[in-house]
Length: 417
Image 1 (cartoon, one colour):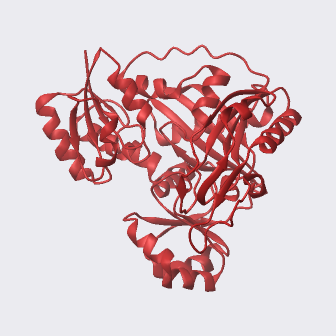
Image 2: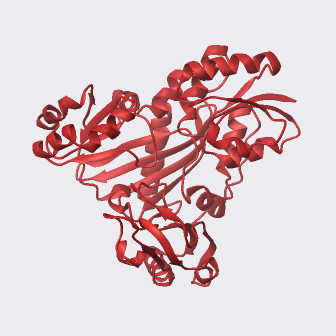
């Protein structure tokens, strides 16, 4: 029997998988909004937020009296630093707080990656919103302003010029930044030609699996439209380069065991390391990896967290698996395609619609917002484009605006992406 502590916010699949294991004695630290994920009788401590490491520490101390846990599972973006903190506090194996912080604090991440000689965009810490004009004068205009913590392209802003910086300092964006309770950083605006992601499984500091994929378009440029990617064949030259960068980033940040999700940007300056996380990817990427390689990254995250063996039998691949995230415009949904309609498109292996008529979205949009996921197999890159175009042709979503500033009545998604 393994004694396991789960520190979780938004990863339901991990919560379910751990509860279904008969060989695990599970305790959980959760936030109020996720309590219905756990069976009656689960050993549960509730904290207002897992971002508050002192609250997490106190909850873990209470749990230790009932369940002297030997392993910590921290599967979400916000639970990664908490998991590292608890491991370091109690001397438990796994990613320490220093490692977890480097995989979740974007400023520390870039410091360590740059110190290892890997290419990154020029960056600097922002200590106060009043520095925004001076930051632009130093980095050049435009530049990117973002929270040091968080995922899903949330709280990322392009600051266009000095006038725009002053408007941020005086406007509603300032209130959003002030509510973050997080350090900020700025980095040069990179004219991205292509964006890639690489998703891996690491055991004893070595990647035993890494898969490179190319996004349809840079993610920040795609918000509100179609976001998706397709895997690259094993012998693709860019794929090999991306996988090599992945392994060097893992070494630079010192991950002993875990799963990874890395973003790489291709620009006129070459390939730049964007950001990396030691958690499963979001959106359709986990399903993409499972369908293409037979790798369940949720299972791999649990195994690497609790000391289970990781036994992967990854097939060679020369084709492409596409994960296509269906757009979800702002407004109230009045009509939407069915999953069956999309499954009838050539090459589609999986389609799920998670939005229904009557659902309302007020915004703002980020990369975690979509109406459903479609997985499509393609033999060539030309077929990738053809099959994505066919899904776009078949997909229809209409939304009605319910307040000033929201979408126009009946906006077809294909017009947005």
